[in-house]
Length: 146
Image (cartoon, rainbow, N blue to C red):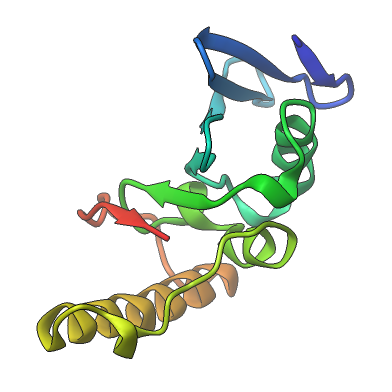
């Protein structure tokens, strides 16, 4: 399963049994470049680690679809809140089986309030970033799984 999109060069490689790296190279004007990477764990409850930027959703979606039906995707995780890690979260919520749990269904009041705080901040962070109003700053810490 190497290249899933010939125009962008998006490709998929199985790095271990059931664990795939989705790679989209980005070439910069004047030479050089970098790549965006997501990881897909295909098991009973598949997980996508990092969603990629919002505009890259069709490429990552196409790559995931080459491995498993997107509706099987159960979890999304990311290491911190920036648009290159969770920018297309809204699109994945629409197209996959991933669902946000209501904060009030948490096991304790404290975890419920923490989840509510996280969801509000995630909403504000991602939407401000979409509007281009936020400069790139050092990574905001945190590990998030939906």
